[in-house]
Length: 165
Image (cartoon, rainbow, N blue to C red):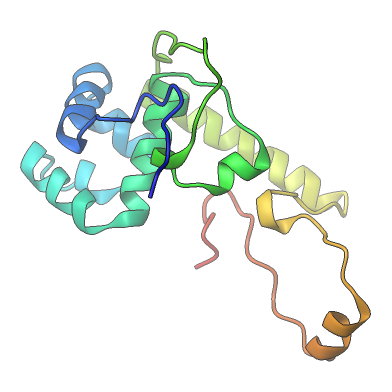
């Protein structure tokens, strides 16, 4: 259970209100370009999007994250905060939401192209992207021995396929 919501713009905000604000400001085309959720592309309507987002937790979290960091432009938190679901994250007192970030379909595509170019440059130089749980951890000898020689393939960090599927 969430003990206390410190300055969280999502606290007390229902999905319909959040989606209405996003659609009013960005439109379905920009939301589809930014989030790549088919509910914004195929026959976009408010009841259909709400039904999909209520049933699909990962999509709802993606929309909530977009709302927090693109629409309300709240500062990104620590690594521990980012592991929490968007509705469980708290912000320091005194931090207020800013004006929404202006986005167009073209701007979103430029941002994706830039991220892809950075990914390719990083891959070419032999570096691995480090995001969240991808960072190396200290392992004790017991954990290393227990794993054995079989290694799991690393999750894909491709910007076009962030979930490794």
